[in-house]
Image 1: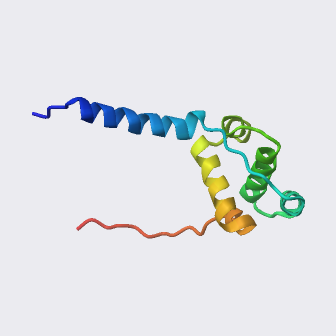
Image 2: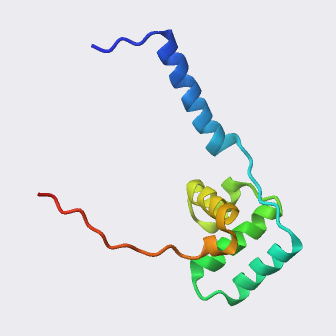
Length: 110
């Protein structure tokens, strides 16, 4: 039988609070330079992949002050997806907005 004491509940509470703060309360925006804005506008106009154009649009809206929850509603994706796009932008720039290669690796059970 698992017995929880006060420290277990306290730790669980803080972990849940940190998770909720990250995805619900925290407001996250991207700050773009004028060159980055122009690059993203060109990506929207000339990009061949629909999702690439959508990601570029998302970043421009974020730089204009739209919150993640509103971006998720407008672009019809989850908040986690928006956070992923923002992270990819911060890590790799416009290259990070391109579609990731699809791998067709399957795990075959024995």
